[in-house]
Amino acid sequence: MENLDLLVKQLVSLPNETDWLEFKCNNFDPEMIGKDISALANSATYRGKDQAYMIWGVDDTNHEIIRNKL
Image (cartoon, rainbow, N blue to C red; front, side, top):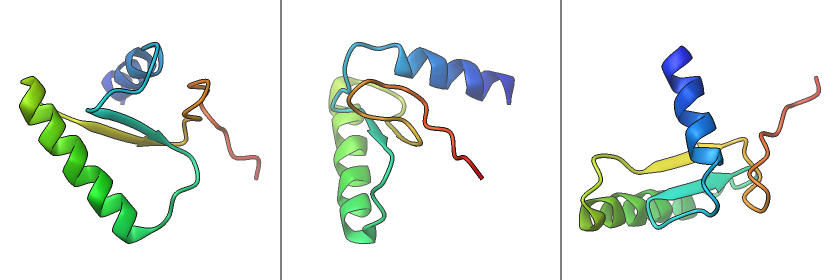
């Protein structure tokens, strides 16, 4: 879990989303999610990346982690 936390911190510290990194906080449309995942995977391959990332719970405008208040 520590490595995952470190990875998320590194990704949210990037200045912008990329064609292999996408942040989501409120998209629950299965068709759009599928298309986005496919696009991310293709872009990562094109860029020579081993992985692409779609991370839920991060505001895509300011990269702040959104915490649910339950």
